[in-house]
Structure formats: C-alpha cells, structure tokens
Length: 171
Image 1: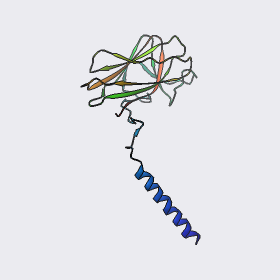
Image 2: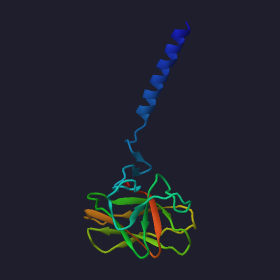
Image 3: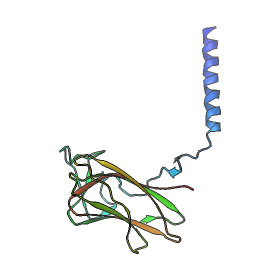
Image 4: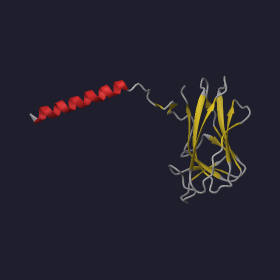
C-alpha cells in the first residue's frame, strides 16, 4: 500500500510541474524586459580577445582582486579601452551593467556608446566608492538604422573593470 501511495504522490508532483510549466509564458532567457544574452565578447576578461586597449590582469590584492573570476581589465591613466563591434541591427534599446573599481574618489571613468563609427555618446559615469567594487547600470536607446556599436571606456587615472553585461531590452 505504501508503494502505491508513493507512486501516486510522484505522479501528482509530475503533473503539478507540467501545469506550472504550462502557465509560465515567458520565453527562455527573458526576464523583466531584458533578454539574458550578453552581446559582449569576453565580458569578464577571463580569456583573451574582445577588447582593444587596456590590460587583462590577475592579482590577489583586495582592492585589485577581481569581482568575479580571476581577471580584470585595467585601463591605464588617460587611456581608452574599446569593445569589439557588437551587431545591434534591429534593436531599439540596450542595458549595460558594469562592475568598476576606482581605488579612490579621484579616479573618474566615463563610458561612451559609439554607433557605426560616429560621435561617442556618454552613457554612464560610475561613482567611485574607494576600494569597493561598484555596480553601475544604464539603459540607452539605439539610433534608428544603427548596425554596429562599440563601447568606449575612458578614465583619468587607472581603473579596473569586471563582469560587464550588454543585453537587449525588449519593449
């Protein structure tokens, strides 16, 4: 009798799971209006490639230690770091999330979007928090007809980046 009761309970669990899955109408990877597909190549700097300028480094000093993984992108004083081109054809809006470490309040980094090789448009300027990693998120529109985006990071004194995410925002 106990075996039959256990089998009936497992059957009800499976049926409940199928019903819950049938009620969930979200597409896979779609959450809160943002598709969960990172458009950037090498966004955590754990491999080579995906970026021009800057230096991918690894260290264990607390203020220098990666936010996640073992590597960070260090952008030297008054330098640029530029992403590989990202295809944005047919997209309307993007969300950029970055983790940055400025070490002190005097280190300023500005992030620009450059569409189709045009004029850089400022999309964010993270606020430094001493030796702590700071998460900054910005949503920005894609100009009509734009096909390609490059992200450009510029700073006045060494700063570090980790765990970048560039995702399409769904209407």
